[in-house]
Length: 190
Image 1 (spheres, rainbow, N blue to C red):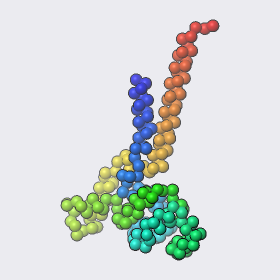
Image 2 (image 1 turned 90 degrees about the vertical axis):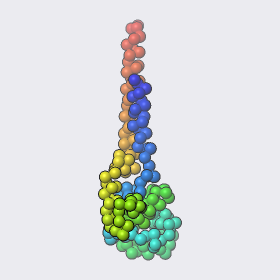
Image 3 (image 1 turned 90 degrees about the horizontal axis):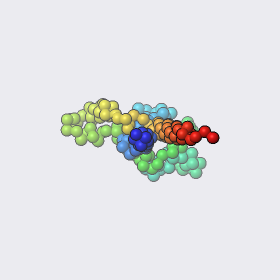
């Protein structure tokens, strides 16, 4: 029975780590890392609207910019200096994302801010000449198909994992204390 409890707790603790951003079409990452300052096609927020950003900058430039915009500004990169000045000299916070995560977000932006656009357009039940309907259906399907894997951000999964790990430690310590107490009771009094 104790082994079963331990296996159950270990699987609950490790479960969040089995979900990575790899299955995310970029929407959740965009919301978590970019959405407070940027939109895709809805105009300037704090930072510029990112619709069409892939036509304005190269991917390699954007990878550097997203990771450390101020390093590029300080190095005198002309595009970086202009972008910084065009946006009221408000520095973009450095993002601790991998190249693959950034590329996923850029794919989401390139798709017009839709995770499921490709799936929706490939769906034969959607008229191919009606992109607005396709985008609306894709957004609806995304909301309807939200699962436990996509309802939390990476940070939330990390915090849940830490909490689970702490609960596992408490369980192990409780079991060890209970075992020691039982052994202590069994020893004859001297």
